[in-house]
Image 1 (spheres, helix red, strand yellow):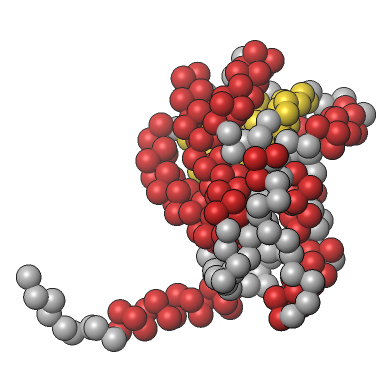
Image 2 (tube, rainbow, N blue to C red):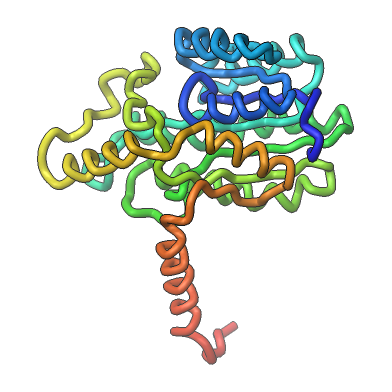
Length: 282
């Protein structure tokens, strides 16, 4: 996928934040982009702004956690562009708290958008990429929290799943001409902490509210402050474009959390050291 001009991409969560940054970077590289989002007004605004630069973009509204809607979005993409070469599973939500505050709705909503939509996206778009024989690429947005978990929240669990899926698929899809990358961003200036604005009606009132006091509320505030001053999503979009062109397995946005990942690997190695030399019974 070193030559992106003329190819077609499908990007979820594309109306704002990282998704819009990726859609913009790809469109400016000559890629025809289908933007997919659940937020219709934001999607319309994004399309209007992008079209000012004479790029070839279109939009489709969908709740990607619902397989039927994602399949319809794929059909709309093929109807409009004929082929799909690049799939960007980017849509994501930050919902649900740690142990002691879990709700079924929070788990269902978060895993549905952050993990199951990635699975369904690959299941639906993978064959569409394979069938034209031109090759392709799949990028799925995880998080640095998909490599170092700082808590028992559904978000972290979902992102670990995206990393595991991407790592496993990379070897499986390479012989089929499809590259696979996982995006693990740090603090990016997005609306991830305002995900509740798009809670589907089936989950309304059941996910739980953000705490307003106590240690957890303070932690949320700290994260919110970091996000509000985070990395520009357009910069992330350019990194993703480069990652696709060069078939990077992992796409990071910065090195802030590298020491934490090294500490995790050291802890894992220590676990092996603790049993080294023992002969397992069979």
